[in-house]
Image 1 (tube, rainbow, N blue to C red):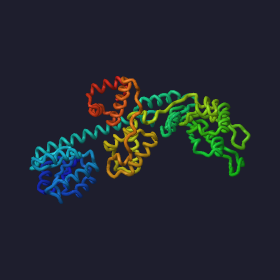
Image 2: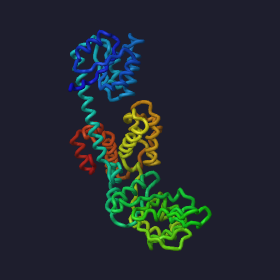
Image 3: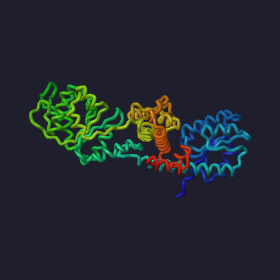
Length: 454
């Protein structure tokens, strides 16, 4: 079977040169295009790794406006393509402008076929290396998951995951404390999946989303005829979690009278349905979460202290996304991969300014905000790369206040920058060192010094 030849797109209106390229580069499948429309059509159809582009194209064969328009279109549709532009003798300004706009290299007319062939083959080899690096980087990103599905490289979040893994196979009640959108339900599900109850049900209920007069029935179930509209006996969330895990989200919103009944269940491990008279034994593990300050609520008489200590045998505090340097980039790439497959397959990644905007933003809505912005951006993106405008991000809200101790502040700043650079380069040490403007040995020393994973 004949090996498939790599594609070379030649955007050139001189038919004689097109024929010369086909003859000289018989190790490539040469696809000719004579103007902007045919070039874009060929690019969409063949997605070539390498393109040669004459800047003087009709309807402006004596100028460069049409050639630059084609270059901009190629960079928007296939930013990883290696574009080699042709310029007239001495047209140094055009060559430099082309490089600034994303071209890989340039050559001068009249064409030296042998010299251009070296540039084309070098460009194709570099493209292949970059594709392999991306493939390896995707594998690196897969290794950034803990608890099965939690994506992170931040030591603060890895510590949370390790704590959850340690307590998973116990029966202690776990309370997850964190701001809205930090992934409390994801962690609760990860705890369930890591426990010996994993084959049982995982039942979640948001206590803040259910009206107070219906919450008791939702939790404890009801007997037929217990109240108007109770046309059949229905088991509640606690009973349906028998043998598994019950996740009570926003537990601080449970009203005081219902707190008493929940406490009784935690003490006796039996429930009575609304309108029922018989005790029903339930074997379930309780995991709860809240963004509220329950200890302050206890002082105000809004939450029972004895219930708090029953629910909070183990307390795990979840850092906000802003406290997890580098994670916003890792998560954004994971969300983009998922949403582009579902909604807009032409989207392949983030433009560099979009990644900078993600890094700079303070993410007040945490992971939920990031997920929503990436989903919207994937839907709205017109090219292959999501831009900062697609994400609709303003200027970042700045870093948190650093420690007053100068040495500590410098170390914290170093850690943040290194984590972000690792995330941006997808774990590639050479690219991270280049991004930071340091040598590989220096970066290795810093990774060891700050106990960061490369």
